[in-house]
Image (cartoon, rainbow, N blue to C red; front, side):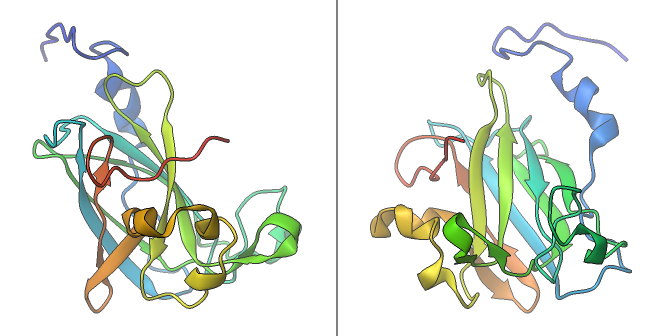
Length: 187
């Protein structure tokens, strides 16, 4: 193994090496309950060039809308086979792919139901902090009433919607800047 200097990477030449042991592209193992889906796409930088060294971190609820986290009030009822977390690298062409299940509806601000979604953090060269966004399923019921999606200007909402390309398959690209930039959130 050889290491080459990577001056364009803010976080240094060991970025991928440090994260590789944590990669998990199967967020919902076969035993998890729910509708299985495959999500694929590409991460693009501000110039529209695919990013070959990005990592997407995925967080989501199970099919019943319960997070595998002790702070979820319904934690004791969550699907024990479901992880709800994964780190997905891009390949040499900026592409990524992961399998999971469609999450259930979770409570949002003031208890309002949120449409099924995944929380996605993007790690890549040039970022000192991860960029936070969401992935919604374009064909999911409840998108029109989701309180967070409603905060996004209508002309930009499609950047958060994964489009169904075949049964059980969705396409969703992440654009870090420029035309059609993905909506990112501050928490």
